[in-house]
Figure 1 (cartoon, rainbow, N blue to C red):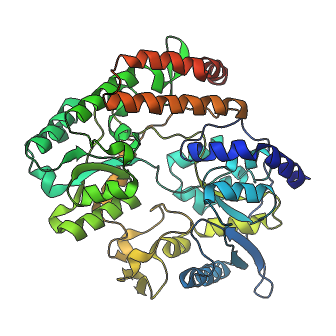
Figure 2 (cartoon, rainbow, N blue to C red; figure 1 turned 90 degrees about the vertical axis):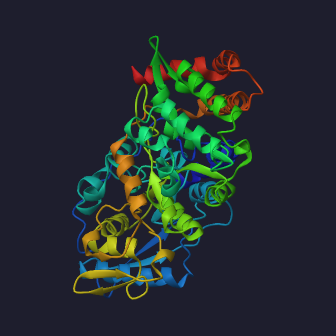
Figure 3 (cartoon, rainbow, N blue to C red; figure 1 turned 135 degrees about the horizontal axis):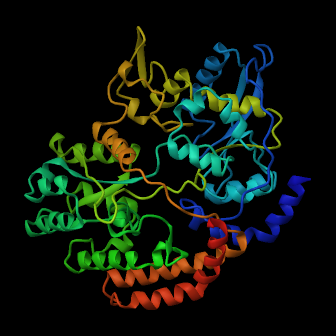
Length: 499
């Protein structure tokens, strides 16, 4: 019955869903809490038998059931779980054709696909609202290993939205530069001692004046990477802020206006890549590796690791990256982390007949044995083992975690070789040191079109202000149009939710 109702809703709402999915993948801003009841969960032990293992189906982006490495991984997982008394047969499913974040939620809601364990990368909220996903609260509470590797943002996000679990570092954009370039600058010592906005400006100005790069700063078409460095310094500390007794979006505040004025100054003086609007991730990275830009921000952990490895391959060991702090001003932190819900992660199908076995898979991959498989790869392929010590091979860089990307639970003292490089580890430490929880509200579906229109208006005005097409004084006009487009109406809802 749930699937039938879901199909009807999909046919009615499919257009709206496809329009909203891409805009909300990374910053959820959709509906009220789903009504799925919490399942009764007992101790998950003794699942299946050697002769009759329990089949668990699994679907995840870029995990190909025909890949030889995936097939070998499945065998190792099954053997590892069997050694702990849980016998499963893990079946990897192939994702439907098309953009994963768009097609998978639709295919799941209509019953085209029915995996027991499913990875979502957006579009999951509507699925959860139709009671199609399991409330994982009781499973998490009674777990041993999942709980042990959760970080504070994981804990908060699953409390607010217990339908997705994603044990990964917070998606924080961390600024980095080449060490040799950074240490050659007179402004570097002052920046580390006091990372004020003025000292960051002095750093960028010196890079430009000494012709060390065409543009000191580049980004990938959005302001997200810059915002992670400068938002807090200018007072843009959370998505929603209380101003003059009202809850408003920070994008329509004087704090945002001051920040955009600074970005406009960087652009006018040639310190910000004048082609940043059209830059994509690949052209941004190319500009960084080739020296056209000196300063970028990348996601803490794996992305900084990739940047570091490619930079060294291109420019030598002296070009190893250095992690820089967020700018200091009104506040100091990298981007605030939205914990209203995870923007991606694993869920369990509410119609699954093997829910315990499905969570047992997730629990095993959080265990010490599972962490070896997930983070180190395949034995005698990506690492060798001797006397409890793991030595990474030359093929290790081709491996990536298929369940939990976090480094938590991995005993690095027993590993010979770098799982991730020191700059990447530094970026994870920095993201933890300067962690700040966001304040946001999940909007009901009827308000989403208003918010989408407001966000488009922001992109239009912020881009024109930074590029000098509009003067900073036009920000007041923007606020008026923002409020008319939905700011006032949504503000009333925010007041109800945050009172």
